[in-house]
Length: 386
Image 1 (cartoon, rainbow, N blue to C red):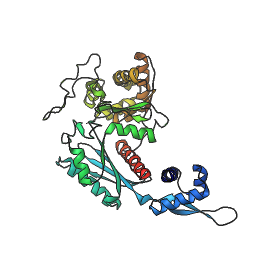
Image 2: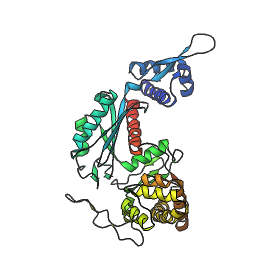
Image 3: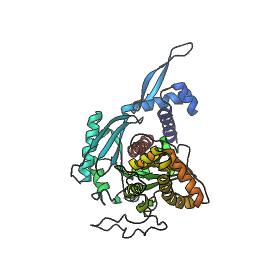
Image 4: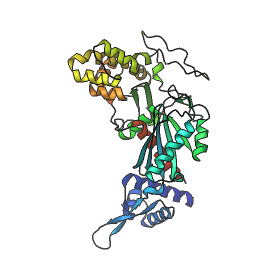
């Protein structure tokens, strides 16, 4: 029992210092409910483990200044990766979550995921002057379905080289646990920590960019489904559109993405639709941005895009009733509040519940930010439990 109590006290102090920054021994005792003696013993243990150090002084009234204790930034690092068909972006963060390096690596024709990830992580560590051995957690965001039981990518239309066995091979190569996660799920993680869903335990995040995907958070936790396919909303059957067929993952053949909701709101579909309304652009986001900038002449196009997206949102909401829908991705960013308000109205017309539809508030690369957050949670839990 004394050992368990020490572990509980150490964890409470560490969590407090990570959340609140440098504190005095007295403040730690007051905020955790520990006595002065117990707080001193706890800090001594954490200092001995190389996790905490004196970070300054706080002037008081009478008597000497009180020492301020903080978590040592270099005590642990994590790596977050955003892997796509054209690039791999890697960020290294310290235990506080501060980014110390961020690098981009192009595959350049190399389709071996292990070699590509190894190169990206090593390059990022060198850039940040961080030893590879200091990494406590590595989280990789990829498009496609990730099997939660094995940790492997079951299939990815964009990354055909990622297959069964890659998860184990990556862990063996990097000599530490590696977690692969669906990219849209990681965007939902970032949104709940930093963005528009900070106060929401139940919400869905609809990603609309080159592709379409859904992140589902219920009770504050990601819902992946038994096989990891929760949120593959592109396959959703919708009225007036052919069913998506031939979608099974078969060795040597990629599943089809034709049919279903994907055929209505894919990047190609939006560009084609925009052309019919007299708007052109290099990609779907540019077409939507042009419609927004045009004002009244662009409203019919925005109304039609909102109507199409509302089919997917309404289908999810009548089953899950999340209350909040966050729109993310390049198309969503281009549409902003003009598009989200239209989607909310369109959903209300065809759905018995009216969720709030808002634009993402996460800045920068949301997949990368979600990967770093997930890696930090994993690393901190490991430190707390050790």
